[in-house]
Image (tube, rainbow, N blue to C red):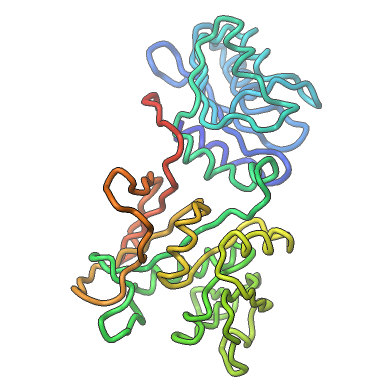
Length: 337
């Protein structure tokens, strides 16, 4: 499945989903691979079947591993479910169910044909890959990335309040790259008053990136006239609320599809409690502070059984730090990979 995700990433982003497919023989060896190369082209499953046929390999009895549920729709191309049935595939594994009502139903069509179907395989990673496309079929709100930079003992600042720089240069360069990719960056007014951040996206050389996120300050106190957030960079908007749902509703109305929450522990905890964080970027600095400000505040969790569960999707060494990227564990994970 992870290979299917890699293949999907080769396709273009846009109104169509990025999908990858791998055909496996009975002994687990790869027969063929395919991915969707854009509107009007063969879907990933059909591309993989065509590649197998071109190499003289028989797909009968094969297992198809696909990042998205095979479609059951005839448009500019035929239904992938029918193509898999006609090819004699005996088992299909997919990561994410198709939410598009005009294309869904492929899994059931395959089952009716006697094909074994397993869904939700590495579903969290699949949803991460497809988040922009999935947003069009889900409740209207932006995809939320929460950034936390902390010590090994989960402190974001020392006892005297100092936090700059907790992480090293490589981690900061990565964080600025993410800023340049999102539509908006969200902080609380407390962070603005305490740290006076510019909230810009910068290149590795320190110059302003060509794409800047809108800067969103949450809270009722005024942003000072001399605040760095009023300087060069993206537009500034203040939202007089502390409610994450109100914030996301306002950002959705402005057409934002992906936002980065970089506020302090209070804002981070509010978004976590509201259950609206889709992706967590946790930068771990190899430091022990022993005291200071915790990364999050009270989440209303009284016992271990109530803990928020997350799935780590990837880990990246950013010398000297470590970046963990995680998604909320909502779906039951299946063992086949």
